[in-house]
Amino acid sequence: MIKTQSAPKNKPACGHFTRRVEAAPAIKLHRRQRGIKASEIKSNQGVALITVLLVVTMATTAAVAMSSRQHIDIRRTENTLFIGQAAEYLSGIELWSQRILVKDRKDNKTDDNSEAWATRLPPLPVEGGYVTGYLEDLQGRININNLQQSDAAGKQTQARLKRLLAQLEINQGLINLLLDWNDADQEARFPEGAEDGYYLGLQPPYRAANRALQSSSELMLLKDMTQEQFDKLNPFISTLPQTTAININTASVEVLMTLADNLSATDIQALVKKREDKAYEKVEDFLAEKVFAGKNISAEGLSVSSNYFLLHAEAGIGTLTRYRTCLFERSDKGPIKTLLRSEGVI
Ligand SMILES: [Ca+2]
Ligand SMILES: [Ca+2]
Figure (tube, rainbow, N blue to C red):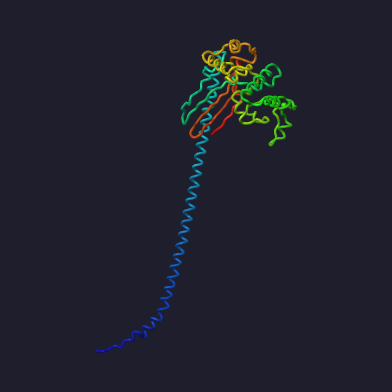
């Protein structure tokens, strides 16, 4: 039996030792390389993840932006269609109102609130929404452009406006301001008047109109006029292009109370109730009422019919509501004219 000499446990055979000595750096290197590669891989994975996240974020942002833009485009197109559709319906109401007024003039020579033109159109369903509207007689109000007249009509309107301002608790100085705003000169009335000298000193500066008012909203340009005063006054006044009479069949209690001093509101309310049953065919019949006894009211500047009407029309289509107001002038000769037209969309 041959015994082979084995190398001591702590001393390996030379060949083995050499191999181990040679192998050790390789193993260490391999481990280092593996270590480096692992960290590089981890780092690369981190970069890749961030890149992927960045790409996903950019893609999401782009998609959201495109979607938002598309949504806005759709809404814009939709709104354009709704606005156009509403405009067509409002034009239909305008034409229909004119025809009703023409027919009314052919049917009778008086105008009152029980007639077809004064009936409020309830909201009518139309494709995509509704339309509604009503006509208002502007001769049921005090035409403040009558103040321009130097004759009896001007003085009469001034007296009526004074009584209206007293009723509404508005400073009487407004009359001189209105007269200055209307008249052609630059001489401010004393004490409350105002002309360019005052208005040009405001920020922003502007000039007195020196002509008839085109719209009651011009009142807001007058010296010291407040929104509260304007809101109180506006329902009872008009700014018509020629001198007009007050229609006693459509005038409100407040306006009828300006026909004379010391009229009782209760008496006038009773008269208006009576008027609802049967409109007056003559101004003289109206003035013959007991309530006016001894008041010496002239029939001048009063009437039982009207030529100027205001249309308030509204069309709601989709998410939009379009409004239109039109000032109509009706006469015995020729077709009805639309003197003013204003619109708004919300
Ligand atoms: Ca009529
Ligand atoms: Ca003036």
